[in-house]
Length: 88
Image (tube, rainbow, N blue to C red; front, side, top):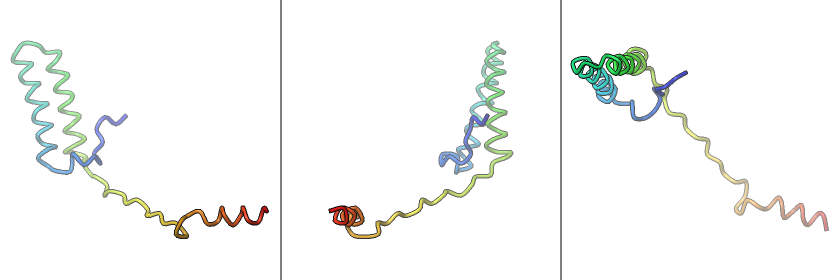
């Protein structure tokens, strides 16, 4: 199960990825100093996971370009009109 999508445009810049990891580990330290180890472990786990996904194994894929769809004729409804004439 993937919680962080490394192909999201938000993670394109290095400073954003590093900031996320630093904030998570900083919050873990804050919780341990405050005497609440449960939340410290959770924040540390989030920091470790974000470090793994955003720094260690970060390999974004280039954005996919959408195919351009063009109609065959001007109004796009010509084949249907021809079929109606044949039915008469």
